Amino acid sequence: MTTASPAGAPAQVLVDGKNRLGECALWCERDRVLYWTDIDSARLYRWRLSDGSLTEWPMPEPLASFALCDTPGWLLLGLASGVALFDLSTGRVGPLIPVEADEPRTRINDGRCDPQGRFVFGMFNPQGVQVGGYYRANGLSREALRVDQLPLPSAAIGNSLSFSPDGETLYYTDSPQRLIWAMDYHADGRLGERRVHIRITDDDCEPDGATVDTEGGLWSALWGVGAVARFDTQGRETHRLPLPASQPTCPVFGGDALDRLFVTTARKQREHEPHAGAVFELDAQGFRGLPPHRFALR
Image (tube, rainbow, N blue to C red):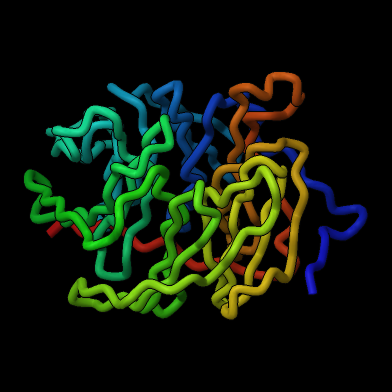
């Protein structure tokens, strides 16, 4: 049974940033901060829980996704044309490792770290052509990164990259297909056969970013219908939480108990919606999230 957000618990605006394409909400439990990006504005943001302060950094090109590193003070950036390390203390972006340099129609899109500290990500094609691959980045050292392509079908919009609580299942989607797949994920990097886990049946709706709770439920931002939906381990929708913005992009659990649900949204072509492009906080309905896996710098 699907349960709507209860009366008296509407979505609250956390930061009314009017981001053109807010994305990749990521909570750092060590520093008690929320990170996210506005892809189209090529900016990285950080909101601090203790005082509500906001910090932002300009990026050299659109930033679609990123990961916390196991070395404090560093991020791995998924920039439009490749991956690079980022020093938060200096704002310096390290050498870029190109991805799909021979395919000008794509850029990096959604990504998350696996339990072994590798960054798994997909690509984006604005024309909706299925030409982008899925990749995994390894941190050989602070000076050296390696990117390998995964043996998955090409996609138009690689999204929803997330892992089950035990790390043994990978979830992902090609958003226009409105299917979220699951596959066995092995510590040595091997992938099992993919299987359909969730079918999105709403019209004019695509699954965007996703996060997983401690019970294994997958929370999907439903682009186009202004909601975040939770699906149980069998792929059945159990909860749907509405938002006052029709283009949610990425949910994440945060707060000291990982019991607050933060959601980024997009504003482009939705300027008539007063809070489109804001970061929202939702009632997490009693569910809790997990600390993020971190990119390993060896």
